[in-house]
Image (cartoon, rainbow, N blue to C red; front, side):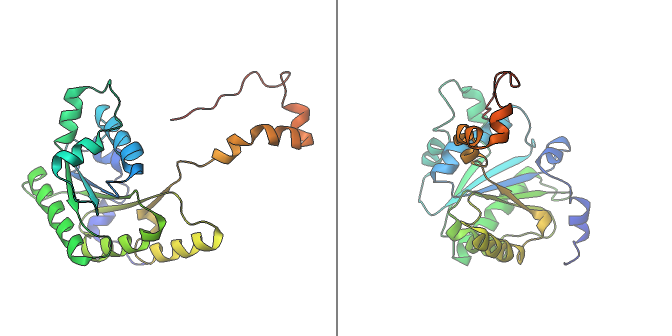
Length: 237
């Protein structure tokens, strides 16, 4: 395992919460910004965090995808699932920190253009250019391009002078073998401490089959009843 640089060591524990608390300039790149996952899940979640002042004040969110879109088209798509009751002023303020870059997932020059956009946005956030910075690379992408994008990020976007975080949205492989292969490929590019895996369907099958589990298991059948359980709560957060 390689030794982190001094800049990385000083900000190793600097996640979004710490960046918000300490006002660290932060750039979030959403790969797959034109897709359903980003539209329905990622951008609404980022907006809710923004509304609750849980993101850094010095923030830029850069959408990246193959689709060619004007800024207006990108903004319309990104806000399409915010809900009718979303505060218009909050939405307008959120869109002020959002930009879009179109590019392919396997072309180095496109990622170099993304790197330039990040640098330009950071100059506007942090004119002095000093202090800690955080880069979050969020992959709202099909698994087939995880490694391609991670490779391009590492070679053409990754900045050793700041804290880097790679967030991979589900599914992380389709079985144990493919999951391990993907972990090995990503692990060859990023430190484990830089990688975050998300599965927003974790537990879905368990919830769907809870009745089957209750009646098929003799132990559960004996205790999972109104005498021992007052209520069952399923919470979506």
